[in-house]
Image 1 (cartoon, one colour):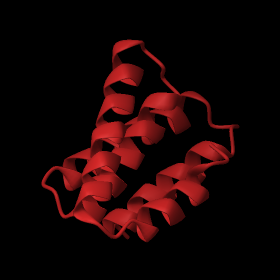
Image 2: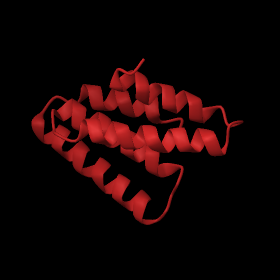
Image 3: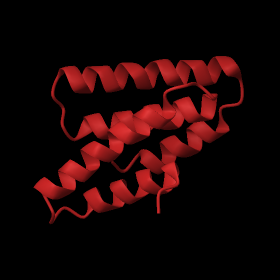
Image 4: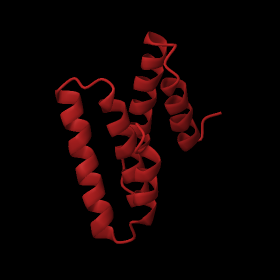
Length: 100
């Protein structure tokens, strides 16, 4: 998604607890809706955003959300190996998690 770098920058600029909490709530809703509606491309992006928001807010569950995003991007890469976005997103998740 072309808006991911902008979103990461916006999350980094949030400095109040209320703003971070709101970002987490919006990301949780986006991930839930994407999962419920079977939005297979949107779901891992939403979960990655949720992981970033939770990490920025210091809220539990960031690691699990990163793992979920990684599983979905890995699966997407396997199913559609010619799409250059999948390995890039997968690598981005792994770097954020600290995987080698």
